[in-house]
Length: 369
Image 1 (cartoon, rainbow, N blue to C red):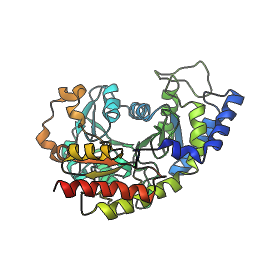
Image 2 (cartoon, rainbow, N blue to C red):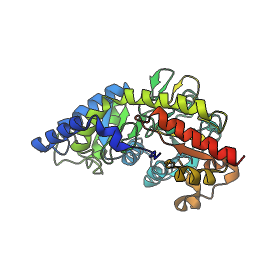
Image 3 (cartoon, one colour):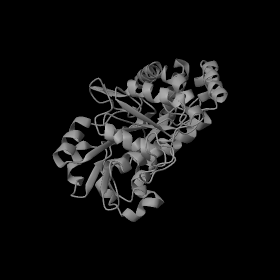
């Protein structure tokens, strides 16, 4: 049996005609930039997130950069985040000229260990940037308490957690939240796209201007500040308008898949830890294993697509070795980077496919115990 890590063809099959109709509408109107499809998506996505404002941008990476700029991050400032994330989180900080400071993660959840956050704060700390990794929200109650104590801003990286909840609330605890709509995400476009959401009118207007050359709202050729061309195009917005209607259903399907995975894997490997009062939406299903390289090779030989999210901590990336981080201070980050493994996860996975993956893992450890 061949099971891809993600099957986008199968994912789009049932809504193919809807998506084609939406794309054709953009082509017929020629409203490719800042058109009605984008406005509709921004309104609908804000409603989905239970926030007042949403700004469509051309990628999650751009969203993080624009959000940091809107918060006034500049050279000499410090931004606190984690090293167990995609490099875009760190690069957004670097692009603002700020210094990156890392906090270790919790070994079970792979999320920022909020209990270790306070000791990383200095007088130069401008923003705390928690990453809601794999589809689960960080301990935002404690993070917000610490942020308030020290008077620093909070930017949530929700690029992997569309629709996730904590205590029944979707993630908008901080000043700004950023999403990615990379094609494989829970809500994915047909290319790169992203969004920045907030309840703060001034920050909303700031991001609006920054994404569009610093242009003053309603004034075509009046630019009040340095800005960028980081707008979401109408074709991507049209696709997302169709797919947003199905997101809650798809997230439920992912959670159902996890129940089956957990049932068969709980005695073989370390399964994902879902924190109490969290609704994890499982962008990826990440287990922790021994003999990872051998297991990956074995699963690949059996037709099972697997990946690692993420094999190299940010501070060990060539770009960031200049930070000269003491790896001993990040024992959990180091440990999980050598053990985490992502198994196939997409809404259309079948029980038969999941059982096959689990059986192959069982077979591997039976032979290699």
